[in-house]
Structures are given as structure tokens and as C-alpha cells.
Length: 339
Ligand code: TRP
Image 1 (cartoon, protein in one colour):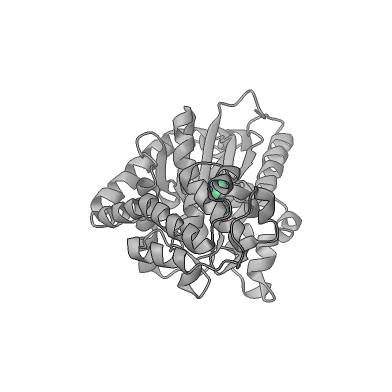
Image 2 (cartoon, helix red, strand yellow):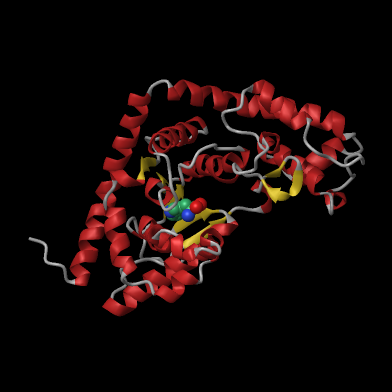
């Protein structure tokens, strides 16, 4: 524990930018669902304000936010146990982000690799929001005094910036108000790679749908994509060391281990010497068993939008109960008059 003064609290955010896939499930949603039973309050946010840092079609954004909410619930996140809501319904995020815009330095923002990648050669044409994005992310986390943030490796730098912002705020105002948040980085075991190229991450932006399993895929699509997944001609090795330099083989074994909640060593031991044709058959059965109920439940939830909106509204209310007093104290520290 980084900061004994602060109650352990988990926060994470996912952008509602569409097309949840197996990588989001194993890397984030399933981990979140497993974590919520550890007795620590977990707050999960659909970060719609982050999504609009690049253009979003309004109707698609609405749909994607609801679908992401359905994905959370179908993956086992209980909206009563955890807090589940969309960012724009808790205005304290944007309010604290403004304060942080005035704490963070331009130089810090310009050094973010995600900014450099996304703004590319034409930074002049990027939105100001894209540059300020990590200050909003820091506000998401710190408006709850969250101590632990489960994220992918690619978000590590943003979490360091969150700590820098907290430290500078605390230092400038002479307080110990914001905690030093700890990243909880996903392990290699939950990093899901592209089914046609095991050296690339599974991604919703790959033009070929065969490269990923979408959380909305039905049983047939799941089985077909696993059976067509790229492999090498060798059988499964005798030990996990034998997966080295075999990225596609390793990926399928990883997926098996994550879905079955076992270890890579165990999967290799169970399947040593088996040809991939047979292994993929069994993996397809396992994936259908674990994932088809999720896509079914998502489809069912998506038929009742009023219910999804009610859940998001209720989550936002609960989130505000925590966020509003922290924002008010922040304003007091900064010297804003509150009448
Ligand atoms: N930046 C994160 C991503 O793109 C999403 C995000 C926004 C987030 N706010 C957050 C993640 C706060 C963790 C905590 O994946």
C-alpha cells in the first residue's frame, strides 16, 4: 500500500469507442469482475468525455456507451457491488480536470507517447482535448482518491503523470490531499494477441474481423475464428519454454489458460504433443462455453435500454457521493469562494 492515509479504492476507465473484444474481456473486464470480490470498493467508468477527444458520431457514441455498460455487466461486474457509470454524468471529473489543467505543465503533456502517436505528423490539427486527455484521466482517478488503477501497459505513462499531478498539487498548496496512485498492470497472460499475427495486440481497429473475437460474436463465429487462427506446423511443446519464438502458439495457450483460469504450464502439460488442429478444436469448445453466454447476455441487456440507462444513472449518483466532497475540498484548498 502506497499511502496508509487513504482507504484502498480501485478505479478504472474504458473508452466507449465500440467493438469490445476478447482482449478487453481477459485484460480488463474479467479482471475487474474477479477483483470486485476482494472487499475493496471498485469504481468503473465509461469514459465518454475521453472518447470525444477524437471525432465520435453521436448516435454511435450513445450506442457504444450502452453496449460497454452491457459488456461490463455480462462479464460479471455487479452494478450493486461496484460503481458503474458514464463519465459525463459526473460533472466533477471535468471540474477537477480544469484544476489539473492548471497544475500540469505543457512540457509534461507534450512528452506523452500516446499524444505523439495519436496526434502524429499533424499535431496542429489535433484537438486541444487530445493534449489535455491525461489531465482528465488524472481527475477521473483522483476525484475518488483512488489508490489502485488496473490498466494495460500502454497507460503506465499516464499513471505516472497522474502521480506527478498529485505531487505537484500537494506541494504547491502545501497539503497531503491527493494519494499517490498505484498502477496495477495487466500481466502477459492476459494480453491477448491478434489471431492471425501473434506479434500484434488484438485490436478493434484491425481491418480483418478474423483477427479478433468480438464480445458480441455468437458461438459459430467464436468457434470458426479459433479454428482458423494462425498456428505453426509443430505440435504443442512438452514445457512452456517450448513456446518461445512461437507467438501464435503462445497466444492460443495463453487464451486457454486465461479462459480456464489456470496456468500456461498447466495447459501445456495437459496438451503436450498434441497437434494444433485438435488443440484448436478443444479451445473453440472452451471459448464457446465461456464467451457465448456473455454475448447472449449482452444482446439481452441491449434490448432494454431504459434499464441500462437506469443503472448508469444510479452508478453516477453513487459516484457523485464520493466525488462531490473531494472536489469541494479541492476548491477550498485552491481558494475558490463557495457561497
Ligand atoms: N486512457 C485510458 C485508455 O485509453 C482510459 C481511461 C480514462 C482510464 N480514464 C482512466 C483508465 C482512468 C484508468 C483510469 O485505456
